[in-house]
Image (cartoon, rainbow, N blue to C red; front, side):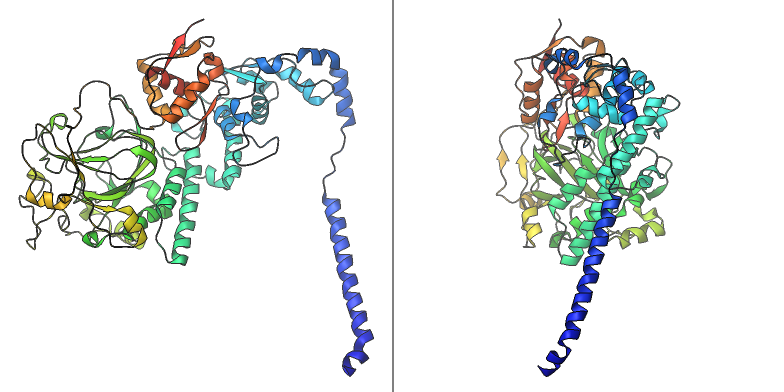
Length: 617
């Protein structure tokens, strides 16, 4: 107490001094902050010049605006809140980017007359460039992609086509020398916007990339890679497994390639599918190597691998793999894999219904795939993890929604892989088979010449033709019992299943009374959520050309029932509109809950499926 009393004045003085310093520092900081604020100066000269150039009075302008909002409506999606909650006038919508990035120099457009109020620089500028009738002319008159976004969202621009099916990518080899100034400006601007919106560095998008990977693919794959890396770190820190939800999230973000080589899985009329091979691959020249996306996005591969490895059930602990097929939104037609080593694992993710794996365990590989007379079993991959022999016939049922599937398998020539690739995959946690690995220790070999004649292992144990486990049980860490497959009995089946197979699927399996659907030469009814552009391109060639879709023709609904909720919803929005109005501002929500803009590909799809008809004016 004495010490405090004696030093009291000193302590108070020091406290006052310290407080004063803090106050001065705070005041200085505030003054600096105020000084750093950008003061928007009034451009008096510019305004004076704008007023002098104006030839229309405010009264005349207001008279021009009567009825214009009805004739020039904003896109329908602008009536909804911004999907990211953004409020700024220049926070353009994803739908707007999707529209503008497809414009070309020859795309015909028309501007709303006198859309901006006189007395401003915007009015003078708009009066000049609104004379343009094509995007190329609009660019030459001083507008840029930012202006097009602003004007389009306010209903000041109508688009009459033609437009691209996909956004422009000047680094695509297919573009060649056809690039225009519009292409260059759109691409340069979109790269900046893409990097900004996805939190990427612009130089990452402009760096080297493998053939076939567009700038937009690169951007979304970088995001999937970034998310995968964070998920792996979070799982390691919490000592937990990778969840189904995390796998779905990165698959949604991953940009899938347009695969034109897997002809054996494509339905009739389909020219490409969304499918990527990760891990080991043998190319057409015979070289065995890790695919370019595998090397560029290793954490994405690690995440998919870890999901499986961490939940392998006791019966399949010895399962090995070198490769992964990652697929999106297509139902594979009946086929056989020709070069697999041993069994494959498969599961599906996403929001969808249907899409069961149809598997023919007694297929000997000799009969016509369209006339198989052997037993078929089905696996619900949305709920289960299944193991099967890909070298036996299999297919995927039709489905609705967004369906992703991952297949883990071993390449037939894996023994010849480079030691460097073997070490790399092992470092990622992939259980790579040894060169002399026995492929049939878990499942028996396929029937026929592709495997041993005995369905037994080297130990003499009888092996099943397939296995399946509940993902819910595997995810919880509880012992997962083998799940029975659904047996589909063909009325023309040549033989009954072996006892070993009956034991495998358990006698509790449900037996379907109906025969499997017969494959015919007729055009298949595809109920998948395969990206509409894919089917739209096919439909455009077979059903209608752009000449059959005049802008002033009215869209009318047919009597055909549509079972897809999201397609039925978008049909309601376009019925009664002209083609032009349907293609300029109609938005809808797809099966995954994403907001989409109605495109010409969507229109052609709906017409080709018989949902819409054209009533010409």
